[in-house]
Image 1 (cartoon, rainbow over the protein chains, first blue to last red):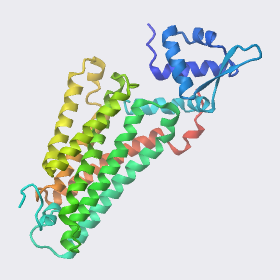
Image 2: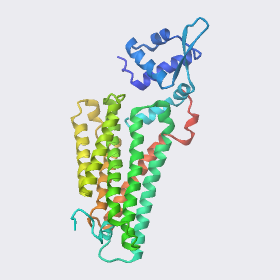
Image 3: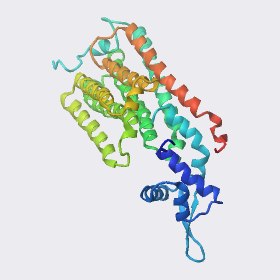
Length: 91
Length: 251
């Protein structure tokens, strides 16, 4: 059985999916690819928007798209360092 | 004379003097205290600054408490030095900021050191607590504030030690009664031992505020162990956050 992902891994997954999709994806497919419950997803999504990792944009047809901010890209870059640090100090 | 309050010659006792000593001896002690402070404060500052970026990109609550340990210990050790220098100046230079100064520094030391001890506890427990609750932070500040008020009201370094020992005991108890089997297995991990040492060494360090309980040799040993623990944390941080960490490739 696959191990349950922790909070940090879920955030990494969400941001990684956005980056993989040329930094522009609609919230619904993002939810699908992330593979968590819609309730959890909306909590993470809201938090990532509030903390400035993601931003919402509207296209010409007024459809909502999500993309990474600079902070989001930086998080992906530093993820390994961060994970190693958190494991080292059991945070 | 108030038995809780250091007497006119208390500085000697506080700094490990035995009877009347010459200026040279106290200068030696001054150097030891300064060197010890510089090591601890330097380590705290480096750890705090080095983890700044990691915290700003992750907003991780465990990291928040981890950084706070070093922020608050750094400030607490600074005010501890202020107090020790105050005692020393009374004895050797007769500057005599003296008794009036003592009641104001002690609560400050108490507040910051209590916050550091609580941050130690929180950094261990953070995985099990809904960390988005701001109430947790306010509770920590409230506990530290109340303890410093008590120290101010009683003007007793022994009360401060007692409060902090209770916090330490409760922290250890918290870890033992934690229901998670996984967490219990990690109880004596090197990390938790380090945290425990930081807390215990700080509390033993508070003996510097009490009377003539520590010999110079014991003090030197204590400072060496304490500095070594801080440096070991710094080395582990350096290992995880090397200067070229920016070049880390995204996975």
